[in-house]
Structures are given as C-alpha cells and as structure tokens.
Image 1 (cartoon, rainbow, N blue to C red):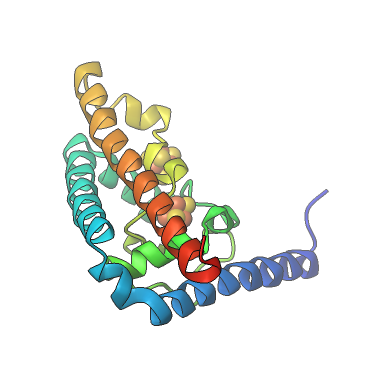
Image 2 (tube, helix red, strand yellow):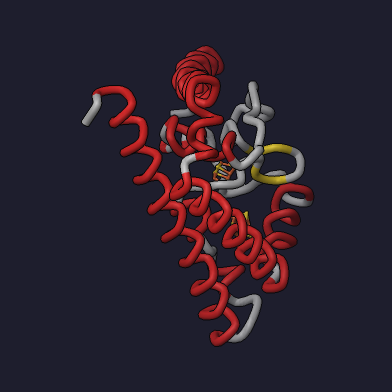
Amino acid sequence: MARQPEEKKAKNILLDRRIREKISGAQDLFELWGDTLRKDPPIFFLLNSLDKKIAASREAMEVFGVASACRHCLEEDGATCCGAGIENRYTSRLLLINLLLGKALPQKRLWGNSCFFLSENGCSLKARLVLCVNYLCLKIQRLGPSEELARLQKITGEEMDESFILEEAVKRFIEEKSYGK
Ligand code: SF4
Ligand code: SF4
C-alpha cells in the first residue's frame, strides 16, 4: 500500500530529529576539543593522512567515471542511491572528523527521499562511511576494465582503513577525556 503523505512527513520529521541530534553532538565536541584534537600529534598525523587518502580516492573515482555516472543519475534521472535514512548510520564521531577536516555539516535535508547529506553537488561530507565509499553499482562496475576497477578498489580501501583507524583514535581520545579511561 502507498505510504500516506502524513506518514511520510512524520517519518521525515523523526529522521531529521535523529540526525540533527548527532550533528549537534559533533558540533559540541568540536567546540570543546576541536583545537586539542587537531594539536594531538597522532590525530594530527592521521587527519593529514586521511585527507590525502580521501583526495586520492576522489581522484580515482573521477578518473574511473564514478562521479559523472552518479551525477547523471541525479541530474538526468532525478534519483540516486543516497536514500533518506542512510545519514543515521553516521556517528557523531565521524561527523566530528568531517568538522576537523574543515567540512561544514548541512543543517537541512534538501530532498525528502534523499540522504540528509546529499547536496546539489553530490555528497556534502568528506569522511564517509564504508557503505558510501565502497558501493559500486553494476553500471559503475562496467565502466572500465577489471584491472582499473581493482585499482580503484585498492585506493578506496586505503581511505576506508585510514578512516577506521582515525575514528578509533578519536573515540579513545574522547573516552580518556570524558571518563579518564
Ligand atoms: S551508484 Fe550507480 S545507480 Fe547509484 S547513483 Fe551512482 S551511478 Fe547511479
Ligand atoms: S554518499 Fe553522502 S549523500 Fe550519499 S548516502 Fe552517503 S553520506 Fe549520504
């Protein structure tokens, strides 16, 4: 049965509330410890390293044609794989990492059926979930030869590994500061 407009509206209100709480949590953590985190030598190193790996990953995606294929879906077909609700898989920690990387977080959802972080220029985040970095639909997988696809996956794999290590380091930092663990 088709979802009623009121039901849809209520679902979006609840979804927006959940992600706004995480965004506000990330902003509070950033205000409290942003400078200290950036000056902490291991985190400083990991932030720079992740920044470089994200840049390499984005470049490889551009070269393979991922970015233009996804843009085509958004502009020509009016649809993307970035559906509403995916944003809630993000933790405040990963959103905090985006702030540490100098990326501002959006304050509102642009399209009811889309992820809160989808902007007119694609994803508004820099550090993203494995799900977002890793997903390559069949159309994308067929864009180039398998060796090139394997190369792309190796580069994006390095981004995901570094992102995981940094998120763990930020988690430990917050736990030590909050509970003296
Ligand atoms: S992953 Fe594939 S289906 Fe999804 S938006 Fe990109 S090109 Fe389109
Ligand atoms: S890539 Fe960005 S916009 Fe798309 S689902 Fe992931 S976080 Fe949302």
